[in-house]
Length: 87
Image 1 (cartoon, rainbow, N blue to C red):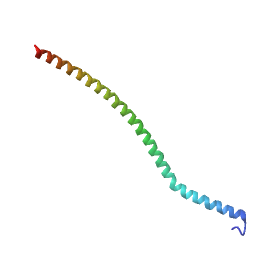
Image 2: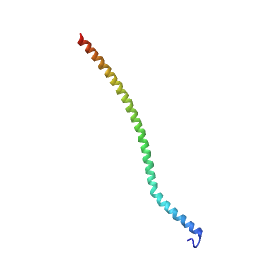
Image 3: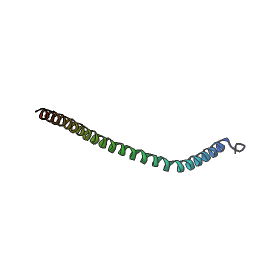
Image 4: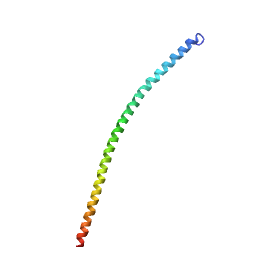
């Protein structure tokens, strides 16, 4: 094409590149959409995980408090039993 017209050669080159871009874009676009959907789902699951972890933290605090109460009550019981055995 360059032998006939340099402008026509550039135009042909542009058309060929445009067709190549379109071919690649058709393959990449679904992948980009899938990646966006996966990222959105991951963000939603991260938010759900944060909520669950907060609930677990609160429950663990309650369990620790109950363990402390149990230890205190057990120590008190042992002290009373020891005092009763001395009598």
